[in-house]
Amino acid sequence: MNLQGRHLIAPLDLSVAEMEGLFALAERIISAPEDFSDVCKGKLLATLFYEPSTRTRLSFEAAMLRLGGRAFGFSEPSSSSAAKGESIADTIRTIACYADIAVMRHPKEGAALVAAQSSSVPLINAGDGGHFHPTQTLTDLLTIRLERGKLGDITVGLCGDLKFGRTVHSLICAFARYSGVKFVLISPDELRVPEYVRAEMNDFAEVRDLNEALPDLDVLYMTRVQRERFFNEEDYIRLKDSYILNAAKLRNAKPDLMVLHPLPRVNEIATDVDDDPRAFYFRQMKNGMYVRMALIMSLLGKGQF
Figure 1: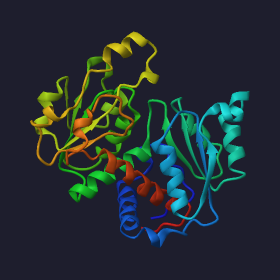
Figure 2 (figure 1 turned 180 degrees about the horizontal axis):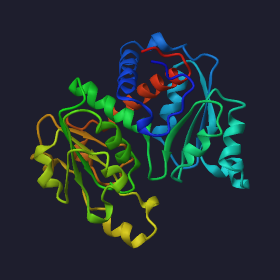
Figure 3 (figure 1 turned 60 degrees about the horizontal axis):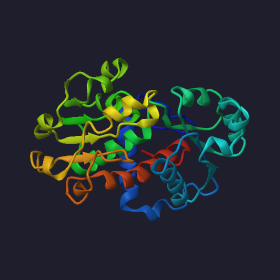
Figure 4 (figure 1 turned 135 degrees about the horizontal axis):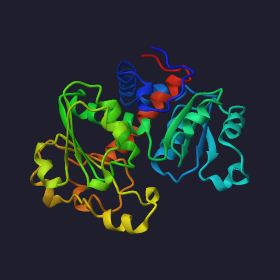
């Protein structure tokens, strides 16, 4: 399979076979990172972040540096010509003159697709508003695959902001293609999964009570209620503490449950969960760097699977 020159805008841009190939390549990198330290020597990655980011931006930059390439870009729109009114299309045309590959995060849904239509270099969507975040999905699935040895035949609970959560939307769309995947959607009515994402699921249940759902789950994917997605501050305040996972609640969970979170967290996972062996969110974060290394290599024609 060859991903060279392609864009990654939505989770369905990759077939299941292509995702599995990326996971296999990521596992090779994890087992022998020194073998990949020069594969992108001389290549440049541009990071275009119109929204705040810690893990995604730094993991992409770390991924490129560990592959022997270099990274440059901006971490907020006020430090770019976007502050002067430059269009996304013009920005990406400019960046394509300097970089071999680009990563973009933007608060508006569809912005990455608009950019890709004007980009002559591979473009990776690092999150477009409440729409999609495909590389977080690769991170999530790789983490589950590493622990369980496979993907499929699993019950996955998604808890919190399922309406605006782009990580949730991406994960559902990609994971629903595997056999035997059941989703349990845990949210208040105001934050339920949108219809276009709901249409991707074959087997799912919706509940409001986390305690009710917890004993049946193999994976619990916690998310924060995102203040930046709300138009009304009162609605955010009313819903922000809807679900808080703590050590006491985990007593009712399976001994091999995986607790995942795309991070950052606010207070939806108490710190007393961090030392529980079922807490995978920090390992998940590191896996993100490895799968992004595999993706960068593949889009630049340096990866084989």
